[in-house]
Amino acid sequence: MTDMRIPIIAIGNSKGIRLPKSILQEYGFQEALELELREGEIVLKPCATGRSGWEDAFAQYGDGAADDGFLDVWPEDEGDEWN
Image (cartoon, rainbow, N blue to C red; front, side):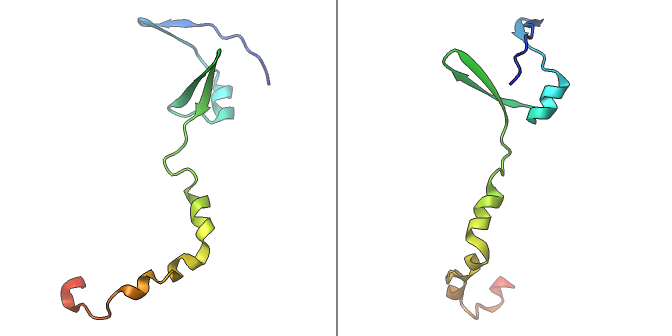
């Protein structure tokens, strides 16, 4: 872990910091980031994507998910209503 001194700068009526491009790329910061306040610390983390973890969740069910018996309850003949 490298410590770095970053100045606080004026941005309009607010204050902010600038993060070097290399840090943004290394830690995966895109358009936004998550800010977590801890006792005496501010932690910046990349935002999780909306579908983060879905692939792993689906992999848990494997190919057997379609064999749960659910599809067996559909009637054979519903007429033209479903066509």
